Image (cartoon, rainbow, N blue to C red; front, side):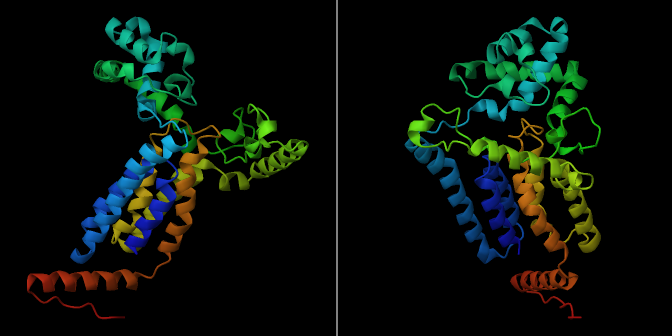
Length: 331
């Protein structure tokens, strides 16, 4: 069962975001400690295949072949960059001049003006200049110094970025309800703004209005009372996760925890997302939406199945050590 769960994690996570590579890495390493010895080689083979395909083949072969630009260091440093931007915006006069200087060298002199609480794209940008690598060590020192001097500013910048995983849409709120829900973005597939779209045959005139009408009707339906909870990002990303973990420990006392590892690892990586209340931020929660029904299905498993698996594991361990274990009788 655990192997099936890990395989499912590969399908749902690896091809959704680059963090999927790290999720599978964590799960495979954890799996090595719980499977029978004869299966460990298979786990290593899966892990090496994953690293080769997603870490080498795709970025080094597939991307150049289709002229796709690989994400730069700014994607991994989105949260620290956002925190530094807010620190400069709020406390530039109080900061060490050398820290301000290195932040400006990496993020630009107008970093304070580019700060937006809901997304880090304005601060981090979309490309990375390799000439900035020489400033990263100095920036790391500046970031840690800022953490000590203005910890609440750092917390504010971080929590604001992750609001989508915490907030629930409410009626009468001044905030756009789509910021915390899972809106349909059908017009995102419209190519009217793409250069030479007409010559490429990407436009079908007249369809855009009908698509917009369908999109608006579906989104209004999502905002109805009760339904807005079902279509809340926080419901799928956080509250269902906490319920599943609680029920797992209540029903099974934490046994066979490895089955939960893909779910737990995916949840943890959610909390370094550079945007959670934008339409683009929905892609970060998609693996959780896909995996949650599987987790609910696993909660319905009878306890006897896990009891039997522990009995088999105990017998295997005792036989390999030359002792005899007492079998748990079937009920």
